[in-house]
Amino acid sequence: MAPSSNRQLLTDRQLRSWLRCRRKAWLDRHGNPSERRWNPHRALQLADREARLQRLIGPGAAAAPSLEQLSQGQAAVRQLLLQHQELRGRPTLLLRQPGQSRLGAFSYQPALLQPGRHGTREHRLTLGFWGLLLEPLLGAPVTQGLLLDPQGGKERVQLQGSQPRQLSQALERLQQDLENRQAPPLTNDRKKCSLCAWKRSCDQVAEAEGHLSQVSGIGGKRRDLLQQLGVADRAALASSKPEWLMAQLDKRGEQRPELALELIAQAQVQETGLPQALGPGASQPLPELEQAPGVLIYDIESDPDARDDFLHGFLILRRGADGQWPAAATAPYHPLLALQDHGEARCWQRLQRLFQHHQGWPVLHYGETEAIALRRMAERQGGKTPPGLLDLHKRVRQHWRLPVDSYGLKAVAQWQGFRWSQSSAEGARCVLWWRQWRARGDRHNLERIFRYNHDDCLATWAVAQWLVAAGRDS
Ligand code: SF4
Figure 1 (cartoon, rainbow, N blue to C red):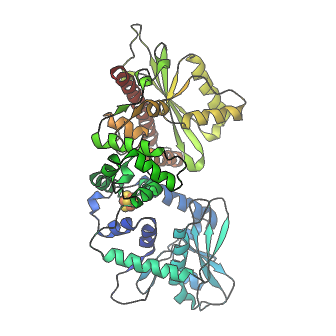
Figure 2 (spheres, rainbow, N blue to C red; figure 1 turned 180 degrees about the vertical axis):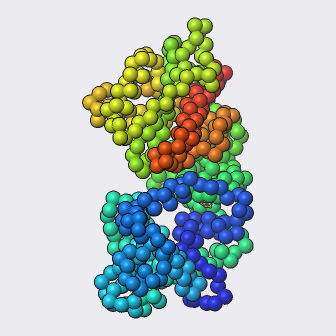
Figure 3 (cartoon, rainbow, N blue to C red; figure 1 turned 90 degrees about the vertical axis):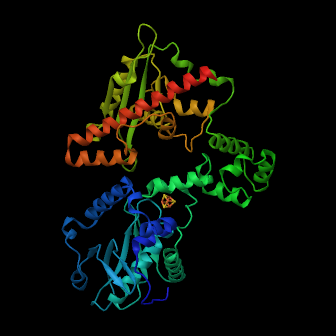
């Protein structure tokens, strides 16, 4: 990008936002701040970055960063604010290198802590951006940057060749987008929206526009394909001819062209707002519950980055003598904390005791997480997976097509009118509470986790009750 004095300041954060989603960079600058929501993922990322920085360079290096640290040749300088013309940023790390520079008989290269195993275009261009900021201080081009992965792996990134041109084009387009009065469109791959502070307002836009990404089962690639075929939105998909769409998908190499029928039917259900029973099996969706003396509703809370299933929560519903189920809100809730320091064997024993105490009771859970976790734990502990596991999500998908944009527990239970008692609670926030509790031991965070998990169990039961009742009426 050609430097010019009348351009607005561009930051590394804006560039990174833009590389993830053009709309996000625009909203960060021009969006209504009241529509912006605090996102726990960001807090988790920052905490993770801080922990990794401390491991890499020690807590002493956390002192306020200054240019003197660079001129003194400090081995690692963290988050030093740099500006060159209209570019401004804070490289996560500047690492001293052998060589010659304006600073003395040493040089520096920027390093970025990538969150996952693989570096992305966003990471490489960000290193290039930091290289541009560093260049005037070193008095020489910065030819290389470093990506550090969480497992300690390093990737050297060349900041020459085609990289400067790509970066320049990206900055030029970012500047144009920011100068535009209109927000760029929603990102194609809406999976990344779950990490974004603007998700709620973008969801409303997507719903109002009948955006194809609102149809359950349509990701970025399918949306592209449908748009190439002239199917612009959900209403157009709902009124598409099944044979035509199947033939088009077949022509374009889709392995399961019959998917067209499913997508059209799903779009129709969402357009009308009316659920649709799938076949006669819908009348008896959970036969295992009919004669059961009780049911355990099971939900796990996990910290996926730490591969830690830290809470196994159970709602214990014992059928009354009259054959009726008790009110779930008054049923006992049994949280079982799995502290890694106590070892997995102890958790496995406690789980086994619970299952044995409720022998013959189905164990109802939503999604595969619980079954997979138990199966793996049983393998590691040389035991058997407990019998009676019943995946409610599978039964919902098997018997009903619902007017929801996702078949996850949150979307389905909320569609049924269930409300979580902590309105902003979600899995990522629960992980944050867990980490805070581990660090500080405050009881309050643990109680929030239990409440959230208890609500997940209640939501699971609410969906099961709907499924049974809807089956009777179907
Ligand atoms: S919610 Fe999604 S579409 Fe909206 S700004 Fe964020 S990433 Fe982009």
